[in-house]
Image 1 (spheres, rainbow, N blue to C red):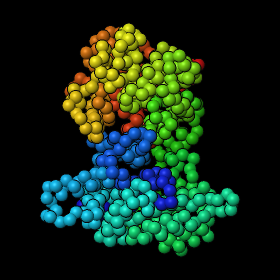
Image 2: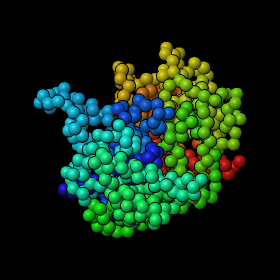
Image 3: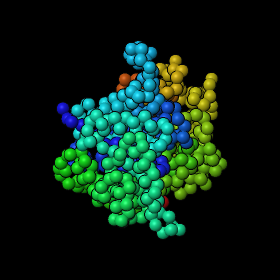
Length: 538
């Protein structure tokens, strides 16, 4: 069995410094050197998972094959490493406390007083090491959410301290990501925020092994020496992380800085082969040197926070590079769309993507966008709720079922073309109870999606409660919209298409979750290809 090594990534000074990207970039470099690596995220919030959080609060909720509703950073991990994550890759304080309280109720602590130390920290250590004990990984990288000094993060930092003591210094190391701000008025970089951040971490009993410093300007040797002296690390262990043109540049930047080399040295592992990043850099080259441009309208309810659709925008980047095309996203709020202004709002678009979401707010705008794309032969892609809106629009405007709608939006409908799934009707709790994770779909061979996938059976990730109402299937197909993908066991319609349209596809699942740098999702690739054709013909 492998002697799994652990790398912890903490953050200081401010949030949103990019711990997830640094963790993913390091993992990519270690993977290129021949090591098996995975990444997990520890989230300090008390929610069990982000499944019930508003996207404005937390950005996108990312779903794994095994049905875990997780932090959006797991999307970065999968896109960089090209390997799936699981329930074990995301741990929240809510899940930790729930587990400990359940054990206490069962009497597992034999009358002991349940405390943060040792019970909560023991549970955290157990969760951290689940992936390591599978024997599948040489290195487990653990990103700790939030910043050092947050009350919520203290049990995690304490668990890290204990693991370093228990496993030894060459089996568990800490990378601390911090900010070195540039003060324009003084014309210099300032190290004091980093010093204070490291001091706070050390007060919790954890001394960082490596500093990664986010900065706008180059950190010179003098500043590196100063940081090393005051933060108790070696000069070569101070790594600069300059602002990058794209997140996909970061693995190259970290390789240039020697982050992977320093980590392997600390973990007493051989450097093995040099990272080539050949396929990765081929993608980066295409991404940065497009030969054409397309304009895609993303119609959503949460467009003020672009992270709400993070996997979709990243899938556009992957598909754009494959087609050597720059994808410009026009963010369009569905609440601002009406049948009257849709033509002007969507003018000049080469493709329309109607995004996922929940609830009735803004759905009439989504329906107006579907109608505009359908009637004007603009390539259309509907995802989850977007697919359902396509069915409603078609039912209303082609089948003349004016009252067609989803039972999510209204009860006692005359024409519920989208209906609550049968197994959801007795569900009362909201968290983790949707149709989640990977499900099979059988594709019709005479379809656009078959051309894209070049496969008859596929597996895709889901997150929904409502479905296409098969009572209307014969009627809708007779009018020209075809169900070209169906779950082979349940008969649930997963994909709809309009064969007479240049490219009109709606899918009940979330293809964006499976798009990676090395495996761009075929539907996104085909959609951007269709948009490129549309742009060339206009």
